[in-house]
Amino acid sequence: MKCNSIILIKFRRMYMLMSRRLKYICFVIPIIILLFFSSRTFSQNTQIKGFIDGLVTHEKSKLSFGFGEQDLFIASEINDRLSFLGETVFRYTPSSPTAFSISVERVVIKYNIKDNHNLLIGKHHTPINYWNDTYHHGRVFFPTIERPLLFSKNIIPLHTTGISIQGHDLGNLKFGYDLMVGNGLGSEEIFDNNKSKSLTAAIHIKPVERLRLGASYYVDVISKGSKIHDRVINRKVNQNLITASVAYFGKKLEVLSEGTLSINRTDSTGRKKTLAPYIYTGYKITEKLVPYLRLDNIHYQKGELYYDKDNMTALVAGMRYQLNYLAVIKLEYRYTHSELTGDGNKLTAQFAIGF
Image 1: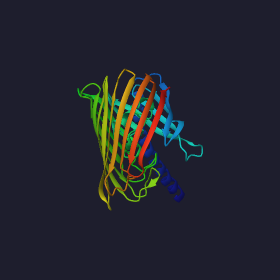
Image 2 (image 1 turned 90 degrees about the horizontal axis):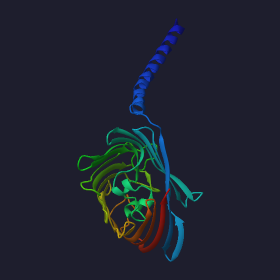
Image 3 (image 1 turned 60 degrees about the vertical axis):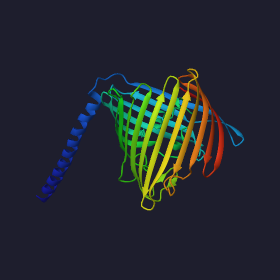
Image 4 (image 1 turned 180 degrees about the vertical axis):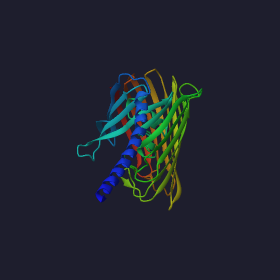
């Protein structure tokens, strides 16, 4: 009898476990069916494209030949609602044993909820400003050769791994929004290093043709001991980023201006502000030839501990010639004044293509 009782108890436990699993399966299967079969199906459409650029630079009395990033771009429409986007960059990295490294920049599964509203899961370019949300790594589309200073100085988080809801071209003003929750700064690609999540909220409107006005807010808690950009953060940091942008790319005039206000708070230093604006302007002499200017500035408040404090100003002047939609030549002069390293001059020629 005792043996039968033990068998009966084990059977009941097994039954309860199977029941819970069955309930879970019954919950998941309808979602899978909804995602894959709620819309009409059609043959899968996959495209593989890429971008690369070659460079000739003259800096510190030295002439150098090189190339930028090789970007592999994969887009696949699985059905009329479900799609995939992947972006992988191959770049020169002196610290790598092979002198090159591979970086997975984006892995995004997108599901169209309804009309112009989408659900996205994966690793995204954080929709925190116009440049980061628009140009990504296809340098053939950049208005200048290099990104603004706020990118090279790591003022904003370029990527976020998480889930987001977005909408675009809504109403007469063509309103758009992005709401994202993801792993915070200092986290790995597949897990968060603390309990806090980063939150991003961005909105924009297009009141007239070729004009876009945008604003965003980003908040995160960076835990003590986080490793960010090869540096260990030795204090807990509460970070808030506020960004505003104006982008106008007309038939003749091009204007792009953005500013990011960073507010970092620690228990020891209180709130410290960093302001990083830039303004770009170009004018089309012909449909293919565009001379341009860009002015960048970064100013850190005294006592800033999270960023590598180095007040900087950069002036960029260049010429862009578009051979066609996927081929461009740029010639650019850049002057930089750094609080720590002084003045610098650099002349760069770039040939960028898409394939």
